[in-house]
Amino acid sequence: ALLQARGLLLEAQGQWLRRVTSAWQHARISNFDYLLYLNLAAGRSFNDLAQWPVFPWVLSNYVSSSLDLDNPQHFRDLSKPVGALNPSRLADFKRRYAEMPTDSFEGAVPPFMYGTHYST
Image (tube, rainbow, N blue to C red):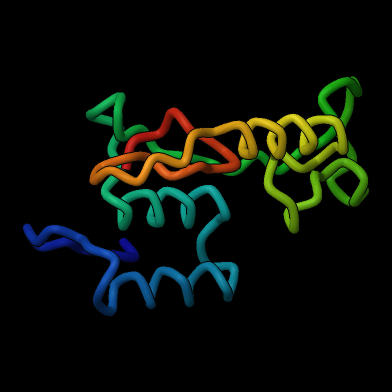
């Protein structure tokens, strides 16, 4: 096995994550396995629905009967958040941000562009 926890809690600090990252960079583990390790480092678990592992949305083609993974047009633009992939959706998020209250009391939630249902 690439990692042996030996009864220790795996955390984002330490050599294990560097070893996993190196293994991924040298194609010794799959993208899927690497994402599982990153989710583990972030404290996510299959044992708690509130902390379920998160995987990025990378495809843009959901209508073709076959998918050419060598075609860059079948992947979304990862330089932009999902909310900014098309101009109308981005305009909606910007409008919502501008309309959010800017309360200054302690514990107030500051305005944000993209909300999420994922817990931290």
